[in-house]
Image (cartoon, rainbow, N blue to C red; front, side):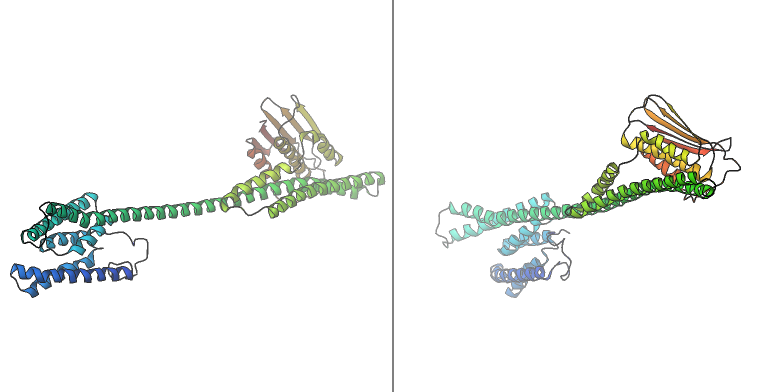
Length: 432
């Protein structure tokens, strides 16, 4: 079975093998016209052949009606037209059959073979008919007209429908290929949109994590020191008013610094929102990259601390009553902003944890500037038994945040208790 393939893309809404009702009406109409033509030719053929005329008409009607199945079996239609060609009937059937066969999905060698058989058959039948007409005097032409008329008629009856069918079939296959490519592109665009949404969600998650780390580092350290100073203020308020005033001033400074850093972070976030609101609409496929770029810009625009501020950080801890020993090895040099900010945050969070969990313990901060990396270590001794705890709450995110920061830069982070009963935090960050 072969098909013309013209209705593959549409929904099957017609009867039997027709995809549409108008296709069924067209084929039935062509079959009716072909049946009338073959029936009329069968009447004269029966008279010449000496058979009952009713039988000749019936044979012609049945042969012409085969055209109704041209879409389902185009090869059969062409074979029937070739078979009835000696009776000088089926001319409409041969034209429509060749067109349908050429436009179908049949192999090219079959199309060429049947088209050649049709042309040869038409050439022979036309040659015989013209020769009879010339011999009987019905046609007043010379002998040259017989081969010329036979060749012209055979070519005119077979070549145009064959070429038209080949063109329509090629165009139909091209359109089908274009539809398939369009469907494929639509699926690819849908996948790209889904991946863009995933990238955008990932970028939003990364930005939320970064903001959470920054908020934790800013709030946890400053507020921890404020709580420590507030506890000391409460203890010495009556005994040593001068020290109480000093501690109160330190609490105020810590609070102002925390508010300043919070305002800077919120300012960056608001600026990012304003830019997003003013930005025109962009394709969905660019959302993920835009979100990631926005997160990167926000991280770069935020003014973070640097290693030169370590002395001030340690001084704040010392003012809160912690004994801190800072040692620096190697030549001090500048690093990338994200490296210095990460190193500072590691030391800051480690000191905050000492304030929370080992108040009064002596702490050692070691910083080593190496050729291709920077290393830091914060280690505290066991807290004295008589030391009072400020009872600072802990969310358990400090060590996780430090590890995330260091790992994001390709560094190594290790933390854990020491054999002496203290706690050690170590990190190594590549300089590049």
